[in-house]
Amino acid sequence: MKESLRKLRENKTARVLLIAAVAFVLLLGCWLVFGREQNTAPTGSYAPTEQEERIAALLSEIEGIESVNVLIAEEDGVPVSVVVVFDGGDGILTRLRITQITASALNIADNRVHVYPSDKK
Image (cartoon, rainbow, N blue to C red; front, side, top):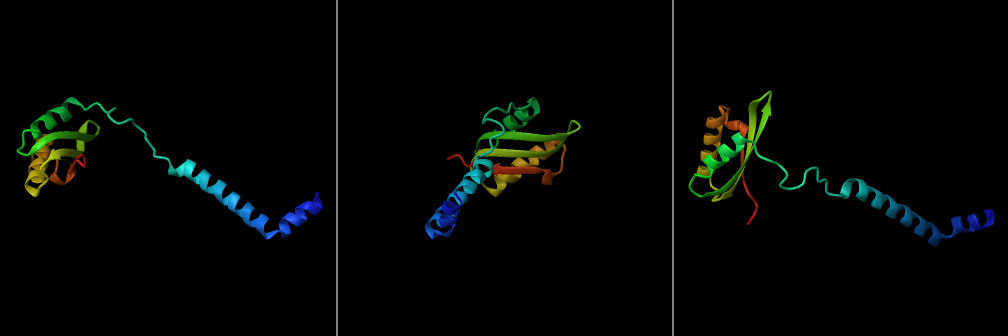
């Protein structure tokens, strides 16, 4: 047994294969832990609140906007920030209108409203 282990240690090909196997196992382990996509909530599982729906309906009336999704972050029941994702024409004027209407409707500062065009084409 000791003789065969000594011969295996001295064999360069066996050492290279052993190192490659260990590296492969480590890479596989890292991929299993870190490489998988973390899907904490299934797509479409969020139910918007009544206030979010009302603001989305209001924003969808803006010229060039096809559909709008609104997410309001609250702290102790008070709106703190808002994320708005919209489909339609992306321009400075459109974003400004969305920001101002949302901020006014929720009585929050303009810099607390984050507006993004949807990447769905």
